[in-house]
Length: 453
Image (cartoon, rainbow, N blue to C red; front, side, top):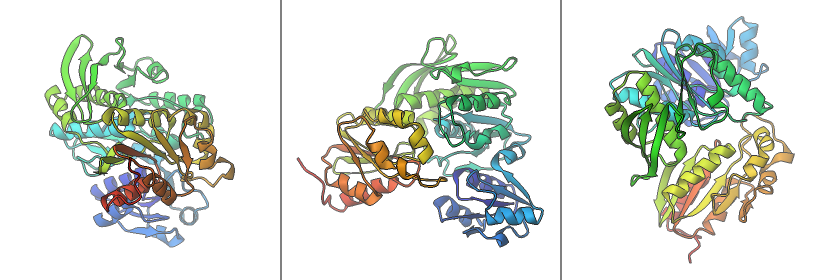
């Protein structure tokens, strides 16, 4: 198996699973990344840059959604008769014969799937899993596993999740995103309806989301979870705890399951935790084990990850790149650090998303005291000069918004104006977490340039 784009979250996970199963895997990517380096450390050869000779000897070439048909490795594979497949076309084969738990949704997939995988491990199981991030407790984004269960983050981008046939599927929410693939909200909904049509045993949907709670199909058992009294699984008496996370009472029907405690801040993470409780019940796990697993879970890298603290200034990194995620993350930061001034450092992710959701982004930063917007992280797209970071900064409805043309400027601007106590939250699916690291390093080196009362 040769994987083009092996350094990405999705394909690096597949590479890891295949390698652990004993398959011969090679890969290539445009640039060095931590995930690619981790694969090299496992013994998987990774080529940097794309060249026809990289596919020599492969039986199959797997490519990411970002790889085009004119990629030299794809061209060479087709010329020499090597089968080329995209992720969607391979996921079914990868999970065949396993009890598949798939977590889908515009937001919350990574945390929810990580919680389920972690709970299975804590219950003594050996699940396989593919996650969109690296949970601190599991230490990897993927594992082949030796048990019957396989937990997978079901990604809607490029309709990848339509390659799955899950036994249990969870849908956390359905909002308009990835406009380069789904031009309208109706297109997103249609994709999720197609995903639900592939579920075999049970569907679990969040009752807080107006689209998710309407999903289902005749003959498929279905349960809901949320804060609403009508939900099959409910979180009640929700409140912050001393660990910086959330406490809640879990109720199933008329049965009170007791107090559950997490280290994860924000009401959105209560929903993620509640979904994992419902999934664990369906998997037959004991609630005492589930309760302890949630208490112990330390979160996922780049999901409200506290990078460090210096002089009463805390730096947090989060993967938020959608308006709803931005609002939820800022709310969580305010909950955990109520006495701190809150800085939001936002890196727009892709030009198409920035343009399509500009109105929603304009209203997403009310929870912050200060907002810094960087240039757009292009990811898979070509630059669009008309929709840069300045385009968004000009539209954000907030009294204190600053556009920084590069990450160094963003860090310098913040360092010149920080006054403790403060929390700096980088909101980025790209590389803007470098701003947080730069701020933290400067503070730890002596705080030069930091504003003082």
